[in-house]
Image (tube, rainbow, N blue to C red; front, top):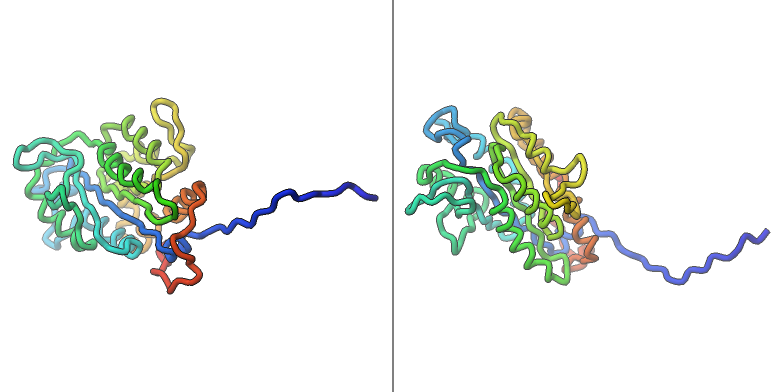
Length: 281
């Protein structure tokens, strides 16, 4: 028997782009590095400090920068990384700063490649005094200002990623929650790597995997943009394992933002030459 007629008034074919489509199509991933120089890390001259550089020239901060940086730099076309420290007293006035350039050049905080970030960190470390408190919100808001400018884009041309390396003792949790909720509406993600053996409960909370993060006002994050990884779980694992875990959620976060805003890659990825390998993702 005739059960009725289905009449289609409007039909649209919508192409769903992948992370690689955006990368190959000209989307720029802009990485900024933030390093924790607060007193809870311990005196850098003491071998017990997380900032103590061993005779072999390494510490947990350097290992984390190298391990993750060697992968992320493939997705940043100009390989120029703004790098900042927070929670230290800096020369010449010894004021506490929560977003100072590692190279002490506010007009040009960029470092050339991961090697440049490592070198800036090595040179900066003996020149600052570890202090506190551990405030995340200033550096999150710093990157968010650039991401806000990028919301004017007509294509999926810019996305910002803030990599924070910290010992995990956070002071401004409420302000950080608000900053993350605001950033969740921008083309931006935050990766937090916890070094040392501190209690990372606050970091797990910010990650939002157990439910959407809320600001103190009750406002809910538009999407989950934070990935937290405890470094020590990967200390004896291959470098690729850390990088894979750190970047596990980033492709989905990039795609979700551009999909929500119906932004296409700047160029048709199907007519582009091959892109960097995504094996680590």
